[in-house]
Length: 462
Image (cartoon, rainbow, N blue to C red; front, side, top):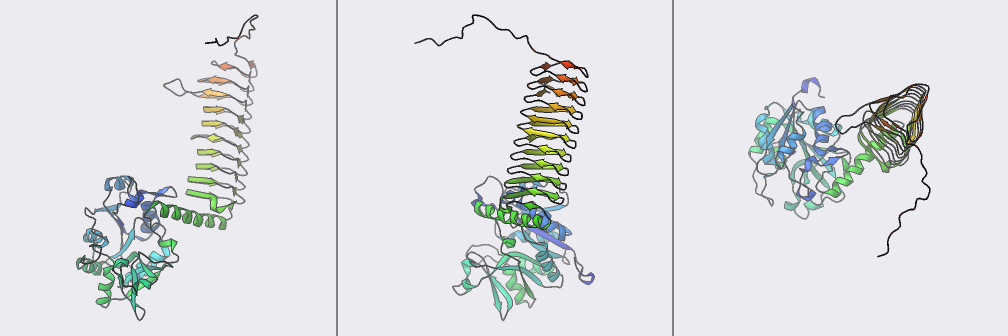
């Protein structure tokens, strides 16, 4: 990140102790979800990790839940802020763990969209023994700390509640994000007081202290207001969700993905797509999804951790999860493809079909109104409407095997464990509980009986 002569260790401090009372939630604010991940996860993985040698997270409200959410991340330094006495007080809890020759990058657990370019600029300035703050210009700066300048030089920050009428006309505001030499930051934080309208220790007061010492203070202007937007309530969270999704949609369209309406698209994970892929409206992509060339996703679909082969079509209102789909397949509409489903090329799952742990061979079809679970289907199998693999005996799951070219008549129940041989035919309405041999017709129905003189019961008059 740095030129070699300025190479220093970066210690990121993520302030994540706030309660977030305006969220009206039992969960800590930093664990609220944005695009399928917590706000803190966005800050940790998108901001802190790419730039940091060490990451410290200052936690407070709901601390056990916050730490548990990142239990797998063993390289984090956790710092508890037991009393909520302001951002300066929060920093004071983390600074003793940071060496004097490091650069400290201050991040916020509820500001998830800051770009790496802005943060790298802050760190590079701080590595040259200066204080760097991230600012933004707002049309309506109400509530934000204003940047005070003298002949263009940054000399301080005044909080909105402490600002004069003249100062409140300033549109350049503080975002709270900054980078500073650790030794200097420790000195400034140690000298903070809470003589202000909030009765808190403001980290922003360090700007005036740096200027008073004659240290250079550089303001890095954020690329956009959205980049530094924080989350304090549900409205702001929803607005940031749409902004985040718009950013992802724009990136995907730049990579060649055709989104019918980018305003009605949600990516809550990672999507990779080949050429000529089309995604219709109101689709939700979760986890890791891979689309090969020419894939068509119809409207109102949910894809979660799936791989889809060339030229496959997913029709409207289908849900796919933890599945691998081959090339030139067709799924839906109104299909549910559950975990463990594997479809070979040219296979079809039709409307109102549910599959689970099913291996479906090349060219096989389950066209409509069927459940196929814990099953292995060979190539070119035809499964008629209303077919069910009865895979669960109340205790254990069992497997159904259907050989190549078999034809399963409509409304058939296959009671596992059971096998149907290659090119076998099962008559409609059968209950198959024993293996059906290859190349033969197997029928298992009760004998049809017509009862002469039978009268349908009638309701009695009261």
